[in-house]
Length: 274
Image (tube, rainbow, N blue to C red):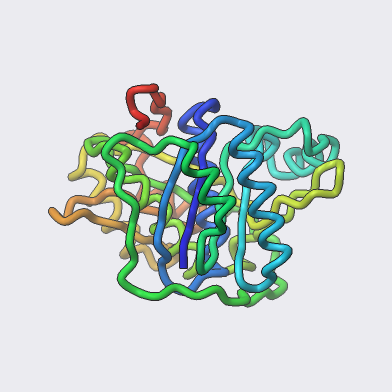
């Protein structure tokens, strides 16, 4: 199973990374196991074209593929406002921060498109050692729980080229553990009736810990939190790369300490891409 994502290099890097995390979290309930991962960067037109191709392939190969996208109307304000703004915005007016596609093989048209895109300097695609499969997630009626959130810690001492695959892996894993209903996955419909699905209702913030030691401490406290679901991906030196935590706002804020972190707002430079 292959997971291919294309991020918009013309938008703020923090927004495109948040889009990647949101999409991966929302696809977690649909995937069993971790697929091969390749991440690309393109301009706004390339991301839009990728999304349109992914939607077409998904329609033609129902139950064999899944895709997602993250649009500008999903940022800012609360979720109800985002849904309303999306419903009043035509597809042509939307800006895609990112899009992704998952399937057994990479279609030749998608492959050709990604060949014209960039990747992070020194980036290496992730090859999974285990087979991943698509599944139908369990969907049930759940109470409207409004105090949930998701937090991600990214190791600020490592190059993003080394941590970006871990963003996907950790988000997929937490999304799979939490499940479709508790994530409150939404289906954003724009003015033209085009659907942008599987984005969690809950806010998702990306933070950079002050140092790896504090990252490890917060990750361990999140792992031990009785009401929290977390996943930490480490490198070969056992250094934490990415941690994703889902749970109540109160519990998360007790273990993910804002005084020891700052918002992920890195700037993507031309030299960072090859």
